[in-house]
Each structure stands twice: as structure tokens, then as C-alpha cells.
Amino acid sequence: MRLFIAIHFPEEIKSALRAIRNSLKESALCGNFTSDENLHLTLVFLGECDNYQTGIIKSVMNEVLFPAFQLLLEKAGYFKRDGGNTWWVGLKDNKTLSDLQANLTRRLKQKGFLLENRNYKPHVTIGREVKLRSGFVQPEVQQIGFNVSSIELMTSERINGKMTYRAIYQKQCVPLHSNVQT
Image (cartoon, rainbow, N blue to C red; front, side):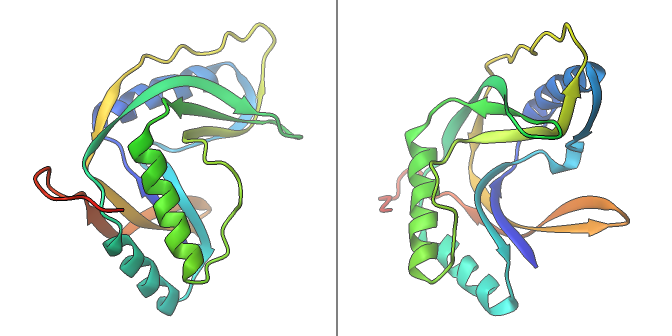
């Protein structure tokens, strides 16, 4: 199974992301645009994992305690790529998010997972291999906040030619009155 740990969005945030993606899509000559149901924030990409590794990932998720926290959409941008750019919507820096991501990554590496060694830049991919018409105006991002109270272990598989993500495990935040240790 191809796995990753992610945060899903409430409908209000998905709606805002759809509007930005659709604006981009209308100005594109070509591109592969993220479907509505696949909009998410990746915390850790794990790649191909077997059932044994999946059990370890769930165990690590259970060990990591985190409070509910708020995230804020901040800006749109892209990564330059040959064959078309990868467009994203970035999130405002957030210490709780950074600590959660770093803690998951550290614990998974301690369990033997080979993970990317690059700085975490929280973003939601909205389009890949995007080539735009001339005169394109970069979409505005309304700074909307939303609460995060859980993380999910997701599978990624191609079904009938379409990339499909499905949650197979969920970890809830700790209640406010608990002592959170990361």
C-alpha cells in the first residue's frame, strides 16, 4: 500500500481551495488538477508499506499527542517543474503543526522508515504539470482559518485511472485539559 499521514479540511476550506484551483484551471492551457475529494495537507509521505509497517505507523500515530490547533490559508504559489509547474496553496507558519510533523517524522525514522530529509513546507497541491496562458493573474487567497482536531493515515491508489485517497486510520487530538507531551 502507498501511504501518507494527512490533515483533511472542513467544507469551508475545501470550498475556498476549489475556488482557487478553478481560477487556475480556467487560465491553464493544460494541467492535472487535484480532485475535490483529494484536497489535503500531507504531514508525512511514507510510500509503499506492507501490513507490518502499517501497524508500526498506527502505533507511532498513537504515541504522538497533540492539542487541537488552528491553521490559516495564506498564499498561492508554485514549484517550477519541467513540463509544467506544480501549483499549491500555502499555510501560515504554525508551531503546533511544525512540531507535530517533526515528531511524527522523528519517531517514524527511529522505527526504520526512510523519509525525505527536507524542510517541511506546509502546502496543499492544487495542480500539477500546469502551463498557463499569457496574462495570467495569480489567484488571491483569502486568509481563512480552520481547526485541526485529528490526523489520518491515508492510502493512495489508482482506481479506474483516477488517483484515489482513502483514510484507513484516524488519530484524534488530546483534550485541552490533558498534559500534552510530544
